[in-house]
Structures are given as structure tokens and as C-alpha cells.
Length: 172
Image 1: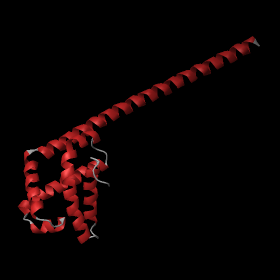
Image 2 (image 1 turned 120 degrees about the vertical axis):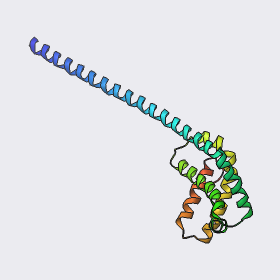
Image 3 (image 1 turned 180 degrees about the vertical axis):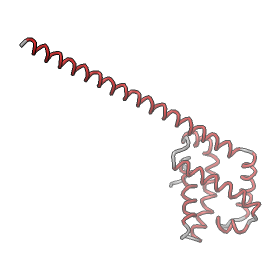
Image 4 (image 1 turned 90 degrees about the vertical axis):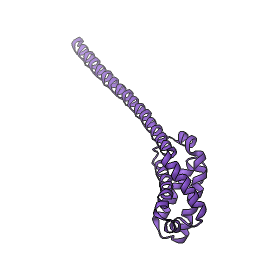
């Protein structure tokens, strides 16, 4: 009888030990997963900040500044829609206007896919977005009224509005 009790005790002890080892491994894996998740989150935040800064440097470089000045003059001189503007200015001027439109479309898509650092974006782009987004949206809205069946116009408008909404200035 004592032998059976000893055997039962040893078996229960072994089971308890195995359970403790298994529980320890589960705990260690969970901690490692949480650490990996935190490292990934930190790396993702670093990548977002780097991309946001890179975009601002692109926006602020000499070539883009030149395009912004030219595009602003063209937009002031030609009050029509995006589509009519595209038809009324020459290709050498259209390049500058398109560059600004496409830059804000890209910003909107990056905002949509959560690829940029929102606080840094607001700090760097807030003032300039408050100027450009309404100007660009108004031109695309005119085109949308002229050609409501054109889905590309709506996509452009949505992207540019997202770029503006990210600096908390226009509803999406």
C-alpha cells in the first residue's frame, strides 16, 4: 500500500512538474511575443516618422518649391476645373500643377493606409495643407460636377480630402 501511495505521489509530482514546466514555457513565449510586438510597434513608429520627415523634405525642396510657386500662379490665373485647367495650360506648366495635385493625392493615400506619423504630419504639413487642400479640392469638385461619371475624379478628391482631414481641417 505504501508503495502504491509512493508511486501515486511520484506520478502526481511528475505531472505537477511537467505542468509547471509547460506553464513556464507558455509564460516565456507570451512575454517574448509581447516584447517582439513592442519592438515591431516601435520600429513601425520610427518608419512612419522617417517617411513623414522625408515627405516634408520632398515638399520643401527647391524643385517642389518652384512648382508650388508656378502652380499657385497658374491656379490663380485660371479659375476653371481640374479637367479644364489640364486642357488650357501647356505641358510645361501642367507639370507643376500636376506635381502638387499628385503630391497631395499621395499624402492622402498614405494617411488612409496609416503610413505616416500623424502628430508630426500635423506639425509639418498643417499650415501648408490649410492653404493647398481647399484650392485643390475646389478644382476637383468643379470637375466632378462637369463629369460625375468619372470615378478617378472622386478618388482624387477623396485622397486630397484625407490629406486635409489628417491636419483636422476638412471633413472626409
